[in-house]
Image 1 (spheres, one colour):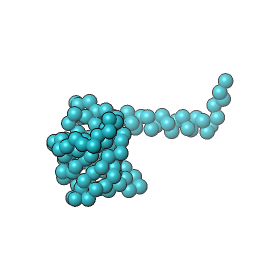
Image 2 (cartoon, rainbow, N blue to C red):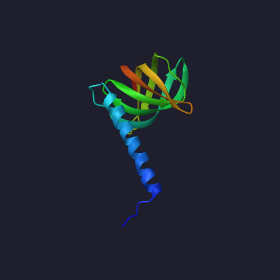
Image 3 (cartoon, one colour):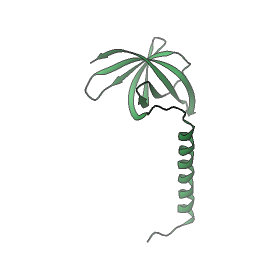
Image 4 (spheres, rainbow, N blue to C red):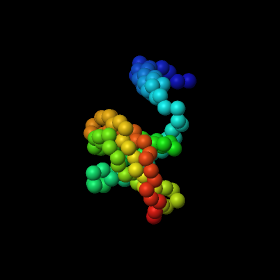
Length: 119
């Protein structure tokens, strides 16, 4: 039998609060298209400079990103490695970008075109 202590009750309440926040954020999503969790290291080509980032999710028309630089609404090239050993390069229009803490940003991009598939 597990005893409830003041610390365990506070911890449970704190986790519940985070779950409610996640639920509320999910309800604000107005997109009808299904997105799939897709956490993977990716490359970004921004203004001729190559930087590292992570994908967060993907859909047939867009990709969510996590990166350590602010991105303005512009076109970027995203290179995504596949498990089969090749990479998919795509042009993406950054639609929004917002800080998510300690120098990190999340953004959403709309797929414009696939520009290459290579090794």
